[in-house]
Length: 278
Image (cartoon, rainbow, N blue to C red; front, side, top):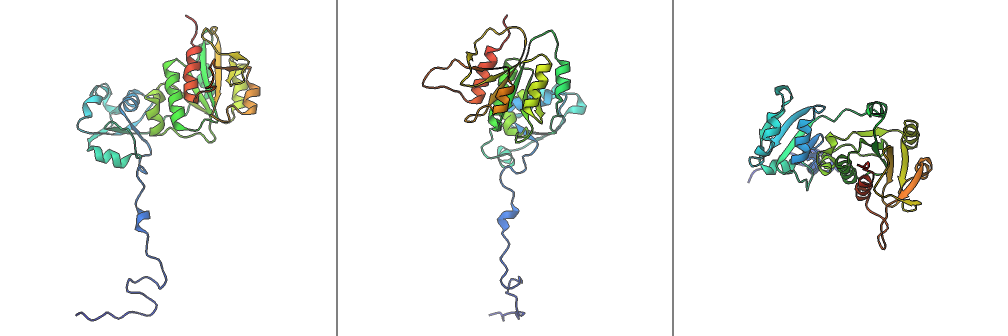
């Protein structure tokens, strides 16, 4: 039996001061998905980001059975824009990305898109052609914003505008829900939505707010004009000042017992109704 080593006064055998708690080693481990900042995932978001010249793509990870899906997108890129490409196992992506991410075996590390200036966006729109803008008031769920962007791309909206305060960043979750629309529909962040509505009205936009109490129903067959439609989050809907600044309030022609839709579904229906008449 080995003799016990001398124990200095005030110190337990571990060498820690008496009464000190042992270190919590669990806290030194990052939570799942903590390293996912800057990563996009899924075939459509990654392919769209690779094709977007405004994106700086750094690193591409693919599983062996998913590499072929992006071969054409990579081949179309100039050498200077091709990211470093690595083949990894699916488990590595599962560890890297947030839990439950449907990555389809691909992930891309990319720099954020540059911010979009509202004045420059308006200057770039043809003055003699119809245009549609979407304004989101108090919509903070990245899944909803991503779905609205996807509908905006499908129905030809020129941009989606939202207040910068409390709005989520463009994460991989938002981009995955948008299914590539993040790369083609500008997401414009503004300081004050009510002031932005006034600026759009000065630029010739008819600003309408979507609300259950709207006096008229929004039906297909819009005139060929500039229109901005504001939508609020479920529950609270449009804020009072937003309602007051809109030129008019409209509603969707829903039927009882369902009087309202999720904001992303409402946006899809409204954007379809606002397609310019052929």
